[in-house]
Length: 421
Image: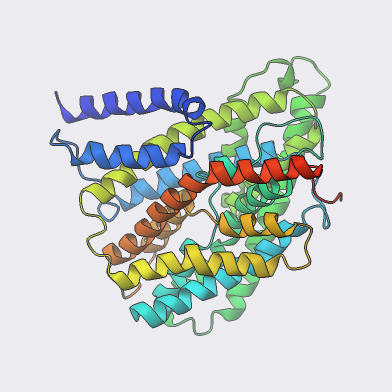
């Protein structure tokens, strides 16, 4: 058996399992990402000739594969959200983005500086890489399929889905800041960073996403000719077309494509909120996302199995655990003070700051721009450990915690949704 044949066989088997496992694991305290992570460790530990996953040697390939996985998941997240956007309706989201995310970046950067002795650029990069919650690995705590009712999303699932949908793009300014600090100490770049990397790129992502989403929504649901009205054909692959179009156009004008894709998905959903075509689009994207997730987590498990964490020290592990157990829960809680979520919901939202594929993308991207004064393998070891720890910790706790929260909510007769717009 040749290596390409073996890879194809294993890839096909992993894809097939991705169809069976969600239902099999539905009532068990074990997530699909955790199963694939463990499966990757086992597979790459076997003497069957699999090539070792090396994020340093294959940085470019990893960057683009994780990039595609994230944008697909962002489309799925945006299509699934039932609540209309608004200052009050999305209050928890704005709090998490405006307070928790920058505080998390600062907390991780300080920890990396004090515990690891890393230079400012590397410490800031680690904070930015590990700050965004992941739209790919958090399916157990995200909203489900699109439904007609706009108040169907409970506060926990809505907050975590909308936060993950937006902070994957809003992390980019901090990544650019880390690159600038590493290149030239950040000298003279503050004004350019604020105007270009923060204001222009973010605004371009939002405007591009709204415009493309509005145009596609009109085309899908309200085209004057029935032959052009794609919602009548029920082709799910159109969701992938919308994802690539939105991302590509926005990146061409130097906006944040991650932001644009999520906004595009929300705008498409608003085009005809209760139409069944939304479910078709979401279902197709969800299937592709599941495939990418399975393959990438097998590789992450392989990375661990072949010694990818050999560069990890106890101090690096401590930074990752501080993020998961202290920094994110604390900043998430503080951001929600006097917010719409109740005490139990606030705890759950704060705890489930899941790290995943987005962190791998950002690190691969940044390492392609410049060096950071820290060996790349050490950066990968700390990031990889944090993602693995998050997959294990949150994968084992998501099902029982969410089941408990749902039961308490039902017992108290609390409506699923938070405040209206």
